[in-house]
Image 1 (cartoon, one colour):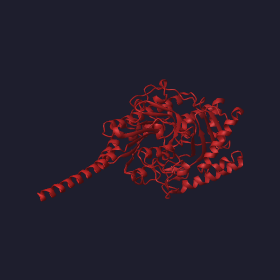
Image 2: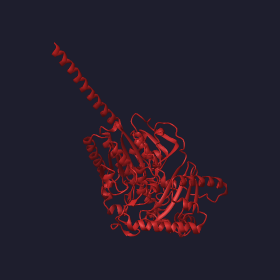
Image 3: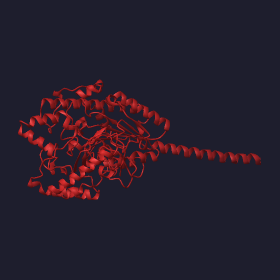
Image 4: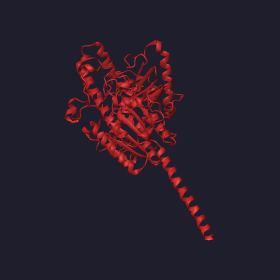
Length: 521
């Protein structure tokens, strides 16, 4: 009896120990299962108002994105920090303004901080970028940031089926690794070349036709461009590319819905900036920096909710994602979590955003800063001297070329074209009444107090955020000093173009293969 009693006690202890281990393991499994996956979908060069739920009048243009919006929350006032690709995309991954991350252009930077994917990796997440790893990373060693990265070649970047395949391949890896995931899917459309254009046909992109083709009589030329046959056709081509982008998003979402991850995944969708046309991409007007922003979170967000009281921007993405994943945000980031807004609560200090442009993909600088509220957009152009012409990719596209021709015979278009090229040191737009920034009010006496208020707001922000363009802002009324400041900036940009590893094969200095250094920040 004594031996049996001892065996019984040992058995009880063993059962208790095994049960404890099982409960601990099960608890850990529940903890891991409870950590949400993050699926981040981006569009390339899609205007904020091109989606149906954001007011597009083009029939049935974005059914997949609209359906996603109706499952969750969409922000009415959402912005990116920069209106060109790599600087914009790296704000999402760094939580820093371009001048603070060091990535103000299209070159590679060695950061002194941990990016979002790095912090998630350190906290047990598997990270992935599908398409455009070059423009989603601070430098070319993608393994530092991403466990899984996929470069989609030229034509396949426009193929809906290819996006589904690469996403399904990644999900297979997730199943093997048994970790929560952070996956960025970068859809290439509606970036140039648009469907139907000569370059698209030449590069094989037209082999992948959108699910519906639009004719010119089904689309409208936006108010910031003049009406002309060639421009109208370019707009139709743009919307055909928007349609194909929606097809690609739909294919990813189909794979997602078919997976076991759909109940524990937060989905966000944005565009990296505005459409690749004059007065949109590469500008700080709303058509350059405003973006659609969708969020779905099963069981946490009321369907078809519209947040129209607060303003958010790309610098808020990183701290928000970390907050959602239960990870303490890096205190050095420039943004802050908007989780309270996702939860339907109020959040103070969300009545303005700050945006910037620094240089184009070739390394030619045109430093600009702006503060945007729901009512006004105030822009400071540090490069403008009345003679220097602004240069962007749109200079090589149909709308720009046609405007230039029309300007020779139409005084109104001439004035508009001259403004596109040369701007003025300061601009002000009442965007609540003039959403396309058509009428510069900077010299109107009735807006003098508004200008002073926004000047002060921008100056304070520049001081608080150590913006090097502050030096130019403080001398904006002295043309000679401002021009000298710009020439010094131009020399610095030229040196970077000659020496720093570049994200493009060519820049203002020629081929970039010889460049070996990383920009240190």
